[in-house]
Image (cartoon, rainbow, N blue to C red; front, side, top):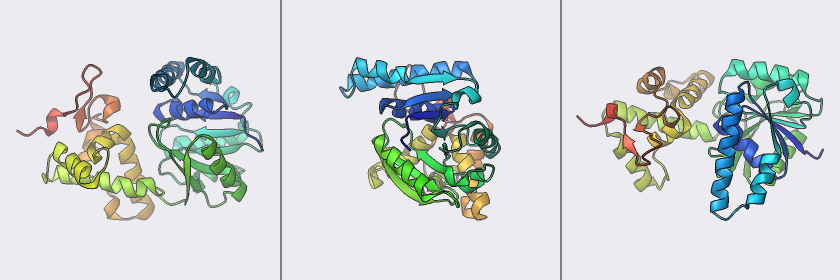
Length: 299
């Protein structure tokens, strides 16, 4: 089946990035969210990101207009998936929400429509179990920022058909991405390796082994990471990091995946990283200089 119509569920950071990339590569995109304000914000973000591409010389103004013209927004899930041949769910990393969405998507979409989730850790097999098409349910885990990052983790559920996997691998390549196929275990590959590292960095900070900047400098200068683990955690969102750690802890039943109490407290207090304005660092629209949050400054 040739795919031309794609629906993206959720217009947050990942959702608008996924919509951007599909539209830029010629697909007609329906972007769905329960909030019209969120959809307006998403279109502004996409427009700004396209402007950056124009400034870099990788896109023209005409290209930008064509991309935006291919994206239509909906607050009604039923209307948003009416023409969909392929759906990517990019809602909040919450199991109950995803199960509810996939139950509805199974009822509202055409029978041959493939249902993909951008989940970063939740079982594809579990998500597929609430549908009547588990062979057409798959994980398509994009990296943030979506327009820039090349990797797409393609996660096969227990019943995912080979043709479904092949279609998603091909789609990823059409988007200029490099797909990597993995099997369905908690955290998959990217986060199974990344999140324990981030959690260990937070534990090291919590135990006073080193400060925020020192931990990040060690990993940047010593391990050639472009961004330190604490800054990366801020960028991902500390609530997302906590959610993934809990999924892995429950899935593996192993204490090594227990989230650091400091991470739990930061999420509880609303210090979620860049999106909330503060995490391990403070983020300001006025100043782009990276400053350690007051809570972590040396006394």
